[in-house]
Image (cartoon, rainbow, N blue to C red; front, side):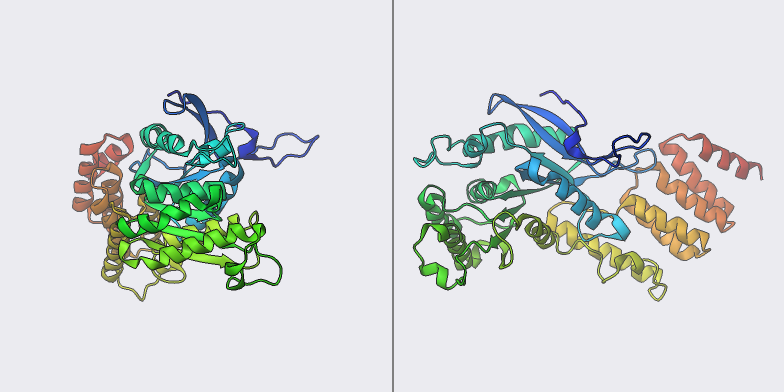
Length: 409
């Protein structure tokens, strides 16, 4: 598989106007290419990765969002997730890698439907496409990007149908699933007919599903009336409502799931708000407890020892929910430490630097920072100990100069 990174206009929001020069585009991601052994074809993928500094900080791990019809949903998801995971101190969502999977020409129905239908002779390649995800794409992303072992699968319409098919038949491929207006009616409700037996028999422990239902009813109908309707136009929503009913029948299968009905949105318009709601449901506990988390760290009514307990408890909770060790953001803890150091609040500064030492003990920078803290406190012996520890992990001239100056003194 050959990685081919090309910047393309699809992934750029241009700020320039014709006749003007000297301005730069905003880059939201890049195009990569994966050759699929399963499909025997090259597949373009759209990839967004959060920026990170590995000069000073440990290489991070990010959960991955895989989205079908990627050419349609990639850019809106990038800006949404950037806003909710970074902007103004937001931690509503974790920072994550986004992989948009565009359709290749003429192959959307082939790839997104798992059953060969007499209604559409191009259908039925969904299982092979799922094998592409499992055998080709996911291993490639894990090898070449800073991934954590947590994956979310999102799709709309036929993409939502494949999301439900994957949840029911390949549940361990992803941790969480977002099905927006899934086309459960496809091929005379065949997947819907299988759902009852699968959802009754399988254990979906550790899996999450968000189901979005738009208003595709005739004017004047409600969700009760539409269930007894037999017209073709309401077949779509009736099939999704039946899926919801089946999901509600089997709480013992351990699937964590939720749904939302959007009376003011139709099939095309629902995807943006449904993606937002779905990700909020999946990562419901990601935000540090309290309404304004960006200010909580600076709340001096909370003692540093109490704050440390809150930090540890929060990340233990998230780690338990996501099934792997989730650590506080090293760069943020570092920033808070130096912020309090400038305020001469040494106890709080030490607390944040100690968080990084405990969670990132193999990184030289965490010891250098604590050395700076002790140096500001005029505890030179302690500062020397930490600078020596930093140098034992990685030699840096700036740290050596600080240590040499202290030794001379």
